[in-house]
Image (cartoon, rainbow, N blue to C red; front, side, top):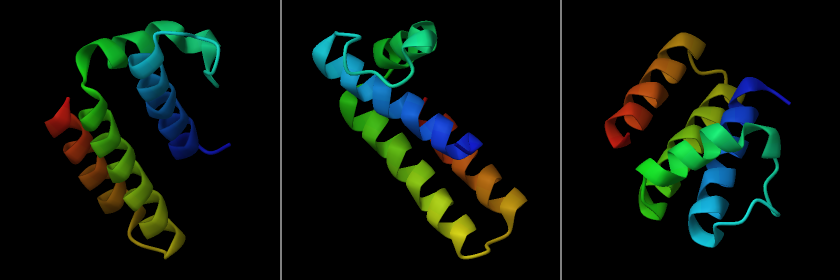
Length: 82
């Protein structure tokens, strides 16, 4: 699993945790501290926005976009939501 996939799975888990409050369906149960922090800080729609930004970056990288620029833009977009 690549780094962006790990990041995506953490935000996915944060969305599940924010909506259910349960650890049962989480992929990264070992990172519950991070997941609960994200879920506690962001609304579900904000988490979805972050997931969308990560997905767009993944697709751009699959199309051979400039890696550094793509990741930088993605992080600025995620940070703006944060």
